[in-house]
Picture 1 (spheres, rainbow, N blue to C red):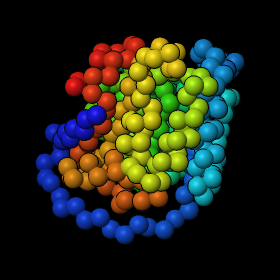
Picture 2: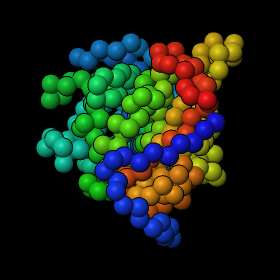
Picture 3: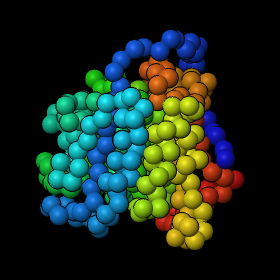
Picture 4: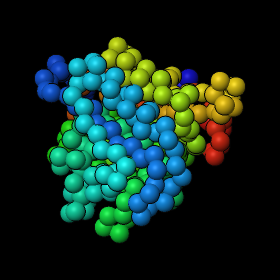
Length: 277
């Protein structure tokens, strides 16, 4: 297990970290899931994906959070696009991902020169996928999101993790995803509940890396899965601390000048290179 801190070139001044008392607000967990692509966007059927998302969401509900979800044909690109980037984006609206304090997206993912993109069910504004250049998450642009979970292949590829600085400019605290391929099935449902349950007692970013990691044993159908968690902040200390933030901690919203990332040393997934030791 490793943590690493990096500073983008635009962060020229280190600010002093002052962790304030938590701000009281009503918290909500949101999820979006597709299992069958029977609209006008393509994708291979994955029957257990909504169960994985639902297990996380229902456990969050059991912990006292309100819950909200959109599945299948309701998963459309505008709900993940920030209006500050495209006027038709409604990520801050009633059905948008940025109206949750913690949100999870369960969908097929790919990558290109711009980083990760997530497949949608039904075409909207001529698009079947959302990409990082369309996203800005958190209070800086009218949202609420502190934790973004991506149950999606290639969502944080090692060589493209810095591309998440764009969406993080909205002051989201933690983004979690996978390096290379991840898998869907009943084998994986329980760990999504573990994420929600343990995320109230220790850092959500650290729980993600611990719970979503698998090596190629028979009980994992011979698959290796390599999760990565990103913490953001306006200083080195703040970005590292973000990985310790629990769901109810409510750390202050900070500009994403620094990023700390966490991974399993030497993890070697399908569809991507082996991670560093």
